[in-house]
Image (cartoon, rainbow, N blue to C red; front, side):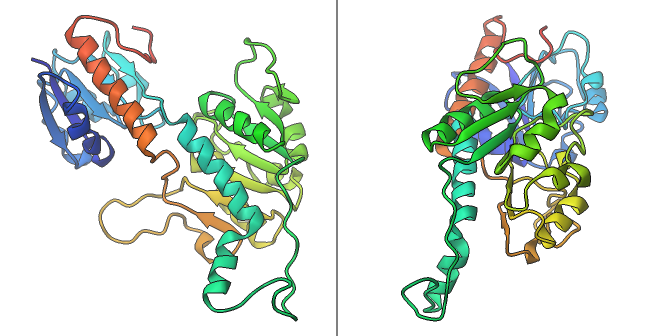
Length: 325
């Protein structure tokens, strides 16, 4: 019987759902990621967002697969992965995050949250109450959406943006797959400046690595139009936090929707998500890393994780392998 350890709060939430897909499995749940050391010695599969050198030192000879319940590798130390051990990721969040990005662009552009807040106080910005003028909101139609990272999420977002009659430009790491229908500009990172200058909306969907950490700094933000909006659905560290805060506070950017952050809670005490007071800015939509949190995304990820564990039990190769073992 395979022994599967779900480590950390994110993975632990998947455990009862995955159990329902498996006929037989010895499942161990450790929501406290820092306490997982000492529980991996007889594990066949840890399901976890992180894999560190400390975890590698604790595993035993039974370890066959490290399964991530998400797609990000920024907390995985690939050099610590024991020889012969497979590493797999889980997708299934493409539609969820793409829908979030479209919703965020609409919310920012149409000022939904401020309008809701004012109407709850009996105030009617616009023509219904004389003396309270309201600026006209721009439409998404005809605007340019620049997408940094044209993988699963970026392509799902582009399809939805085109349905809103937006123009789409994109950057991706590999151009070996050639051009993409309906994309006005598709290039590598060497086209970044061009992309930023064109953007009415910039959606960041890149993975975090050495090449993308701090990719968007003060210089890059300065290339964007002051009427432009930024939506980060990838990792916060791709954008320099102090530079982004200054650009928003000084209204050199119209606004931003931020779902990913520079610091996360370590326990159940309140935790502001950045050193800079983004929460004080009226032109920022803040959400706590929930863009992938839909029923469809969870359903697909759970099915993939369960399928990979079942495949391992049958001696078959898991899906979505990162290291190609």
